[in-house]
Length: 112
Image (tube, rainbow, N blue to C red; front, side, top):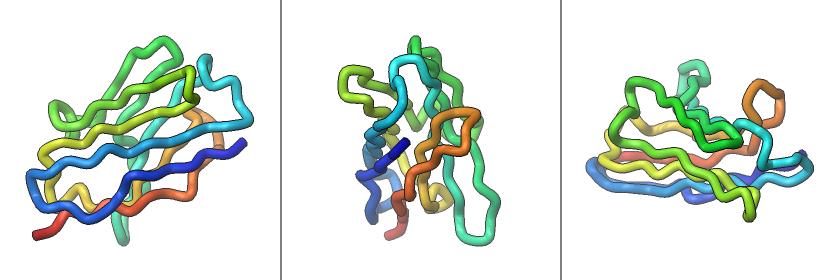
C-alpha cells in the first residue's frame, strides 16, 4: 500500500490550498479515507473522513472551511482548504481509515 500526498505549502491567512493523496495497493473505491494533521508538539488529529460512497464527516474546527472529496477513477482523495488560519499549520497526512496505512505527510504553513 502506498499513499502519496501533495499540495502543501506556505499560504497567507485567509488563503486556500488543495491537498491530494494518490493511493495504490488497495481497492480504493471501497475504502474510507481520512485526512489527519499533526502540529508541532501536538498529537495527530482527525480532520475529515470520506466513505467509499462519498459520505463525509469533519472535525468541528474545519467545518465550513475544508471539503474532503474523492475521485475513485484516479484513486485520489482531496482536501480543499479555504479561509486558512495560522492554527491550521501542521503536517497533513492521508490515511486509509481504520488502518495503519499512512502517507509521508505534506507540510501546510499558514503565516503572513
